[in-house]
Amino acid sequence: MKEKLATLSFSDGSPSVDFPIFGGTVGPDVIDVRSLYAKTGKFTFDPGFMSTASCRSSITYIDGDEGILLYRGYPIEQLAENCSFLEVAYLILNGELPNKKQSTEFNTIVSQHTMVHDQMNNFFRGFRRDAHPMAVLCGVVGALSAFYHDSIDIHDERSREIAAFRLIAKLPTITAMAFKYNSGQPFMYPKNSLSYVENFLYMMFGTPCEEYKQNPIITRAMERILILHADHEQNASTSTVRLAGSTGANPFACISAGIASLWGPAHGGANEAVLKMLDEIGDVKNIPAFIKRVKEKDGHAMLMGFGHRVYKNYDPRAKIIQKTCHEVLEELDVKDNRLIKLAMALEKIALEDEYFISRKLYPNVDFYSGIVYKALGIPVSMFTALFALARTVGWIAQWKELIADSEQKIGRPRQLFNGATHRDFVPVDKRK
Image 1 (cartoon, rainbow, N blue to C red):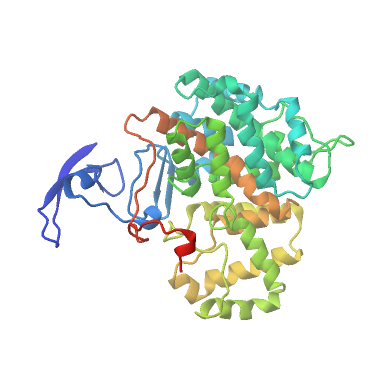
Image 2 (cartoon, rainbow, N blue to C red; image 1 turned 135 degrees about the vertical axis):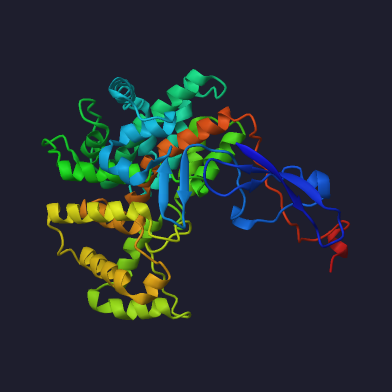
């Protein structure tokens, strides 16, 4: 890591002060302002942390201007095309792609942790049948520490490793249980003879009364979707996991906090919002009027699933999932579905209309993943739960990196206070 000095001067008459500048292997340099308050008596003000690096990390790199996403240096396009989800999980957790022996061992260990404690079935019965799956995931994942308290010692490396395996292995089981409970069907126990994604699909769509048949195109589509969502740098939910982790909270509590953060419609709920938008449009003939309202400042119409806060170019994940989306639609022959016809018509307009092209409002990963899930018969309420399943790998890697980082302290942002100054208490009978 290269280091040099930056000199900051102040227009309020304060003397100039020097701060170190750190450069990573790629990306913008950062000014180390940790001593700013001690040197100047001032804080920085950065709502949304738009210009603040909160940590050092070697896991995921994004170049939003160029549309680049790298996991441990590997382009997302190469990983999505050539890897299984567990290979990518191994890479994100360990920094290198596994060889055959490592891959076999990793897959075996994950498969040995797929079942959940039988008493956890009682947790689900405590929820209403129509409870949102994300509410269920928050509660059940947070409760894992009550069942697996032998792996919550965050200072023990082996304990952290076991917790990581348990979370990666059990999230598909818990997610599928939430789906089954919501739909009134019996839980399906995992089959360890199946691959990670095959097992998840079996637990989601299998029933005791007939054999579930795997479709390789559907399996591969789900594999790609999970890979594309596995990590995405210091986003809101990842930052939440790190902030919770900085307090010394156990890993199950930290991942539950990440799930709660992901639930927000501005974050993981975006693909759910896409389907709601399509429902509001209603019919292909209504698209021109909807697009007109989007373009008008006072139209109050939101185009969900287009553009991205980080990517100022085409979202590299969208290119991959666009192809996957069309493969699934062709395989299932559901192109006559009303919402899917709507989505395809909206995609065509957005890719050809100069208004969207000039503003780089391209369809993003949320737009296409929502369509795929809809085609597979997955209810809208489950969309964000599947996102959480995929992102758990990234959250765990980020949490483990935080715990091992000697520079990290408990998260404690400061504030620009603009409330009341000191005032004295007035008894109730003397208040105006």
